[in-house]
Structures are given as structure tokens and as C-alpha cells.
Length: 278
Ligand SMILES: NC(=O)c1ccc[n+]([C@@H]2O[C@H](COP(=O)([O-])OP(=O)(O)OC[C@H]3O[C@@H](n4cnc5c(N)ncnc54)[C@H](OP(=O)(O)O)[C@@H]3O)[C@@H](O)[C@H]2O)c1
Image (tube, rainbow, N blue to C red):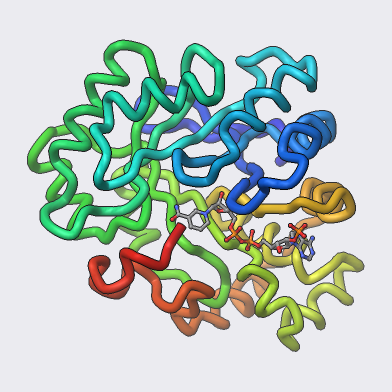
């Protein structure tokens, strides 16, 4: 696996195995994005409510890398007209299409059937190549599929050794839905964990790199956010070591359904957590 490795989506399109998150990356966004792209970050994650879309568009142009060499993910909010919001996202980013648009979180009622229908229209018109969901439980994905016959390409959820779900992984693998792992570094809160530190020492890397590598070897796509250059350098440098299967297991066994946001929305009823995840 290299930073240029891709995964085949259930739509037939491909998606990079690794990306950059941009929530709160509002300081020097364009410079940071251009630098991240120059290092080879193949995917950028954003959302209509992050305030980073104009900076990402500028960073992309500043980098000089062709549009089709960087995979752009954005989102619509549960209160949006998803079709209009997709158009507005393109205007903010100042690009012709995005690669993937996600429903940011399920609405308080239902599974977001109207949002989904509008995203299907946006995809048919080429505004977004793929569509998916975020913070969805198995039950809600099933409802969306039953209503539309259209399977999301991705479910973006909080995912780390400290908080993950075998049931969700099995379900997504069976439906060929890719899990994008947000807050893969636990927002730094668990970087001092003893097991992580032991493994970091064993492999001669950092705790953050162990967390990212665990995701890559799980087949889930980590999208760590980093503003600092040294973090960007470190995070992309995870393709030259491999965790032994016993260490993968040790890491997976750290699971305590931990969430840096309070609760895992795909484990807890989503409406209880709908105000906290970004
Ligand atoms: N769909 C959703 O509801 C949802 C929810 C949350 C997040 N997300 C997406 O997922 C992305 C990532 O999640 P996140 O921002 O919540 O948390 P995260 O990526 O787990 O953690 C980000 C924090 O880790 C630090 N960091 C980065 N690399 C590091 C390294 N190598 N060593 C030590 N610290 C490091 C960053 O510092 P610096 O910035 O100072 O470098 C920042 O403080 C978001 O930016 C967003 O794109 C989506």
C-alpha cells in the first residue's frame, strides 16, 4: 500500500485510502492545503459548515496539481436543500464537481430520504461523482436503501482503536460501503495511551502514526486533521511500516466505544448526539 493506493467503491469509482480533515483548519487554509497536496495528500475532507471550502479551492489552485488528482469530499447539512447546497458547495470551492458528497448527519426524524433523493439528482447531473452518509447507524442506512434502492458509497464515522464496531465493519464490508474514519487521532486525547506508546516504540514511529496505520490495515480511510506542517509530514509518512496481525488485534481490543465527541452516533441513538458532531 502507498499513498496513491485506491479503494474500489460500490459505484465503480475509486477513492484514495487516506485523506486530510479540515474541520477548524481555518487559519492559513489555502497555504496548508497547498502544502498538504505537495506532500501527496490525495484526499481532502470538508463540509458546508467548516468554513474551509474557499480556502481549499484556493489551495488546490495554488498547488498547481490538476483538479482530478485530488479527491474532494464535502457534505450537506440535515436542514439543507441538498441539491442547492451541492451547487453552493461547488461555488464556494470554485470547482466544477466534487468526488463525494455526504449527508453530514441524519435528521432528527426519518433517514434523510429527501436529502438522499436530492443528492441522487446532483449525482445524475455530475455535480458530485458519488454520494454517501455520515454518522449513520446500520438501521438508518438500511432505511435509506429500502426507500431508494441506492446504496451509499461511504459512511463517515468516528473510528479509532478506542471506538469502533465489528458489526458496522461487517455490515459495510457486505454492502461494499467504505468507512471513512473521522477523529482518527482521537483529537489527540488518547495519544498517551500505554499500548499505543509501546507499539510506537516497537515500530520506531509515533502514537499518531500507529493510529493511522491501524485504520489503513483495517481497510478504513483515516482523515486526520492537521494544521501544523510537522503533523502533515508525519501523518502521510505511514506507508513504510506494517503492523503485525497480533498488534492489529491488540489495538482493536482497546475498543471501549470511546468518542472524543461524547458518544458514537452509530452506537447511540443519533438524535441524542446530533448537536455535537461536526
Ligand atoms: N462527519 C463528521 O461528523 C465529522 C466529525 C468530526 C470530524 N470530521 C472530519 O474528520 C477530520 C478529523 O477529525 P478531527 O479533526 O475531529 O480530529 P483528529 O484528526 O483525530 O485530530 C486533530 C488534532 O490532532 C492533531 N494532530 C494531527 N496530526 C498529529 C500528529 N501527527 N501528532 C499529534 N497530533 C496531531 C491536530 O493538531 P494541529 O491541527 O495543530 O496540527 C489536531 O489538534 C475533521 O477535520 C473533519 O474533516 C467529520
